[in-house]
Image (cartoon, rainbow, N blue to C red; front, side):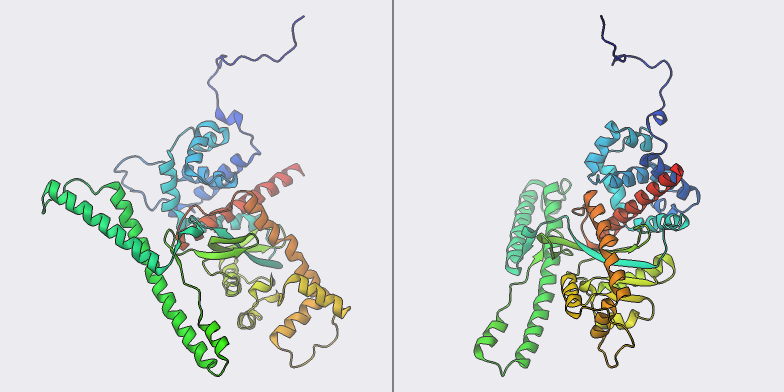
Length: 445
């Protein structure tokens, strides 16, 4: 008796020409990304991605920017950031082949497209945000601000002291001089010879970054000396032991791979990278504003993010909630009339401990002559303030977790401006996934 199996034949030919559309689910993410970008494109809102191309049609043919955008955005939705891996997926992944219409740009073309358009992703972030607003996924009642330290495209070991950089620059110059001497002997003193070797081109680029890091260290050193001089002046009447301790300073370092990155402290220790910021709407966890900075802490970012919310949406949030890292009395004072602020003055566990000590919710008329810190502490200890701040842990923190779970554990690009563009790309894909799930749920209803 024969087995009752479904027929399996790898060499079976198609009776009719196959369509890749039959292999992709219409309610899947790939279809949604394609339809969304088609909508934005037909409205003429992707023109910024076409500016770098020759309108006359002269020159070699280029891949259509719309196709490149679909491939790149879908890849980031899947947590795939490597241009080489994206290029491989274009050969083996059905959804990717559908988005690229079976075209296969190589990894260098993909990497160059991302690099050349990195500053334009902010525009696309805004377009996706508008679609979220049209879908009524943004309320602007409670907006939560938080930051996370993300590793850059470099390492802690690339941090060098001023002396190390001087030594490395000297070695590079000596190497370049030796190559010049050999080429002079081979081609003649006044003749160029062949194109500059690849290894020397890389050395020249490295030397440029070394000098940039060296200049930053000189500025930092001058600032440290000025700071120490002021400190000595204030403490010259203190004991000799304390004075010696104050004079002892750590040796400043700069990163020679990405001079604009900084050493950042996170929950797991230290990373060489950037401080990525987001502002999340409390309704459906939509990111309404995002930014990145190389400042090591969040203390100056509250005003920046509130203004970014206004720029993206057109109005200030009703309430803005942030943790103790954003506490800065001057910023609180400047923005308290624009939005109702709930900013912790101490760590959450200290806040809870304080509530247990008091044992009741503050009520009645507010006491006079309270300092800004005391006023905010009292506000957060009220029932309304406590419940509002508590929402932070179930709104903005999960969003950061979702982005990191998707693969954003380090940036692929170097330099602050490019990192900002890549962070926009991560955030717009987060919103796009939320929009897709919302439309999927609505369709089921």
